[in-house]
Length: 102
Image 1 (cartoon, rainbow, N blue to C red):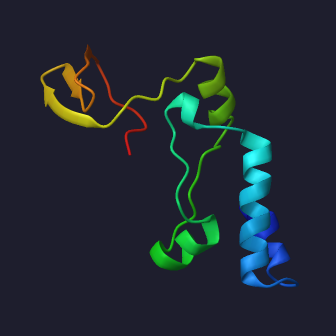
Image 2: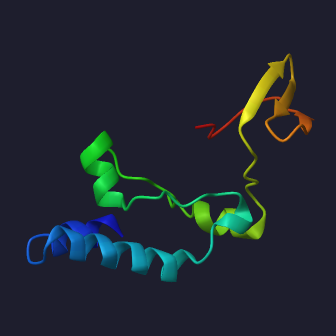
């Protein structure tokens, strides 16, 4: 999605590109909230200007793996006690390894 936005920025105003990319993202990915992923309040190009990075959701089919349940999105980590992780929602689970924790 970001590639097309970068290309469109050569021909269209920033605000138009930002709106198009957000709309296309919503159409492509649908509602991410049901998978535990909150959409940023600002568009990807605004975030790039502010923080120097694009938000990323799909790397090597990550989104499809989340939809299929192969990858589970969990709330923020409150505490880690050995191999037990307590989450901000009060639930806890045991893990051998933490991967993709951002």
